[in-house]
Length: 59
Image (cartoon, rainbow, N blue to C red; front, side, top):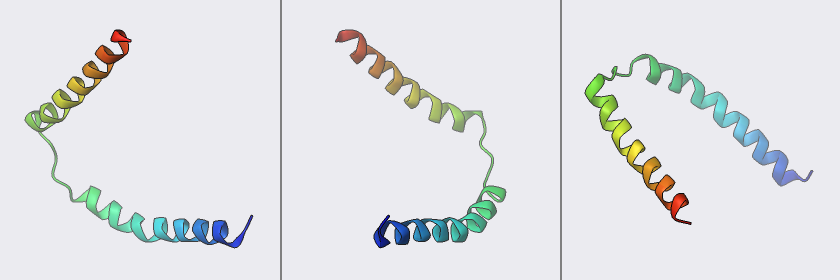
């Protein structure tokens, strides 16, 4: 293992240590989604999954 890999691993761990408290605060104070918000998320994801399945079936 060379110094670049060790430095990258240390940087990754440090980044996670600094990001975790901010992420915890953001999740705690985030607005809750209603059913319309979730449908706006689920419909495009279902369309993409359906398109991928269609492409797989065509091969």
